[in-house]
Image (cartoon, rainbow, N blue to C red):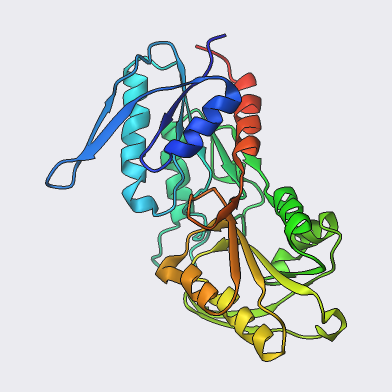
Length: 300
């Protein structure tokens, strides 16, 4: 069986190289640039005929990435690729999972349809499933989801003495409990009310029993960072030492990572997005998922 041929969309080169080393497979060359009017130019400089292809593209800032990604998948098929898979460490457009107000677009379903039409399979890490129980509710292609919780627990055990794991809200409790259990640490969750994208009110209660520990705030995504920033402020007001803020996906809209650091926090993420805060490597998890999903895909 010919090994999978990996391609990197711009910005994903380091992770693609690491995956190729792990999977003992080739990386192909994909040239992309923009014409002066903003349109995308794309050219594969590697022979794809009868090859199984996987394209690596984390989907932070998705509007500038999804159209070139769809072009790449379609071109790979036209050039004879037998299968085209997507490795999307961060999967965007999971927020709008229902029509909250009349006339709204349910973009999670629309993006799922686009990707399902373009690709044969997809691998991702900790998608933001809120009202969906599983990606199969909106994606019609085979998917593999890997979870960073064990890696976060391992990092906490190795780096934090006497941690207290704190989750962002009651909906996160099951996930946070798993991180805390593996890290052999106690946990609690915030009481949160969101009034808008950047307007969050939270409450920290009953923390006296854990004084002397280091607070470790854990979430799947840090975007605007308002929940984390407010929690850091409240902890400081209660006399706690500077906390650690950990996220699977560090999007850091509005320079929220800098705001957290400015408030005294240490900020740590996985390399799903590839920011300078990445200390937890999810490459091996993705590599195992690629091998697993490729092993059950029929070759054409």
